[in-house]
Length: 219
Image (cartoon, rainbow, N blue to C red):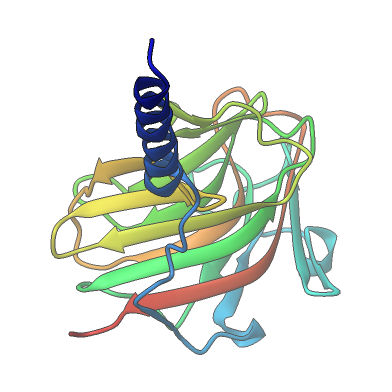
C-alpha cells in the first residue's frame, strides 16, 4: 500500500469526521430570532387552588423552583386535570409566525410521570407539544425518547413552533432531538414547570432559569 494512498484515505476520513461534527454538533437555535421583553409580571403561576403560591413556587437568585404533590388539588376548583405547578407565560400568546421558548431546566432525581414543558393550544387536542419525564427519561408525549437520562443536571431547552408550516422542533443542549408536526389550533402559549400525569411520583419538581420567548425576524 503506497504512502500516497494512505494519505488520501486519511484525508477523506478527516473530512468525514469534520463534516459529522459540523452536521451533528450543537447549534444555536436562537439565530435569526429576536428575544422579546419578559419579566416576572409575565409569569402567571398556576398551582393547587387551595395553597398559597409560596408553598409551591419560589424565585431565588434567578431560579424558578416549582413543585407539587401527588395528593394536591388541581389549579382550579372545577378542573378535572391532575395537580400542577406551572409558569404560564402571559403577554406573548400567538397565532401565526415562528416562536421559540428557551430555558435552562433541572429535574431532580425521583420526579416522574410529569410534563415539564408545553406548547399549549391545538385542535382537537389541548396541546401542540408536551415534554414528559418518566423515570429520568425525557420524551415527546411519552412516545419518543429525546434524552435517556435527564436527572440531576442543568440542560438548555429550545422549542421552536412554526405555526405557518405546522412544525415543532425540540433542541436539548443545542442538539435537534425531534421535528414533529403541529396539531392545529388558533392560539398558543408556552408553559413550564410540573404537571402531573400517569404514573406520577409522590413529589414532583422542576427548576428553570434564563427563560426567554423569542420570535423569528421578518425577512
